[in-house]
Length: 372
Image 1 (cartoon, rainbow, N blue to C red):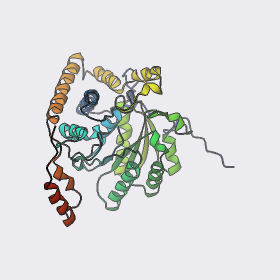
Image 2: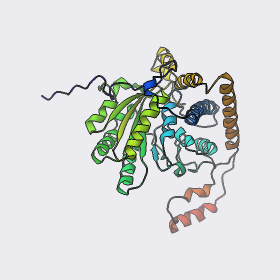
Image 3: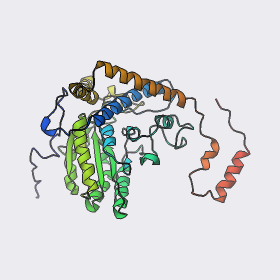
Image 4: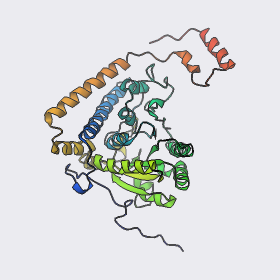
């Protein structure tokens, strides 16, 4: 009977790569030496998405939007990833990576309009809330049945490789979706064809109500990469500097034509899975509180203060500025009408065929429903 080959305890797929300690102090030997502009931008975007999440959860509770999925406690991974990407790169997200679009310059109003599904939504209200996507920033909508985004990303990367086009694909999964067949298909395909793709697993310990301990018997999720011939690395997902070092290295490796990387970002979902979930039914408050003490924004804030880049005054001013920006955008978005009904026939074909023209003409013969 074959025996598993034991891995070294310091193997990157078994360890946990860190730069920042819990108190915000730094391991100088691992410092990625990011410039101040990048540090300030990462800090701003992490704080911004947390404030957005707080406001939109309130809007959902008020009945103004139907669904919202916050990224509270997981802000670092998507925000840092956004800072490692180039314009030509593609993103295939899961539930908690929509903020990458904002990092890449997508309009906050259009981003919020997607949640409302109104006329400001570039997808014309056709997708469920929180399923943002836009060709302008090369981000593809995710499927609520998580998993399909993984082979899609690998296929996209392979197409760019075949066509000798610049760019890489970055895709995300949670710990739960590693149990889906799509995960294994994507990993196998990536290992065999070596496309320029980075696959990031946000291990937040809970697939809705199922703990990560029930997803796998492997010591880590990162170690799964070796079965497919892919490098795997495990990184502290609440450490912005460690994430930047690991994700940027994986992206650059893909750009050089050296193939895929699988990253396990170890983090925690502090809030509910979504606005439809009550996490108190399946996990303890003691567990949540332990992870709250490792909050990625608080840790990065401590580091920024140690660098002299943030203090109480600048933090308060930034929060006030961002809050006003968010509230102003929400106010404008909430005044927008629903998409015009004749947009129903748009974007189906490059040129509208005769049968859709007939249907569109027939629709115009019927009065519109009263607008409330």
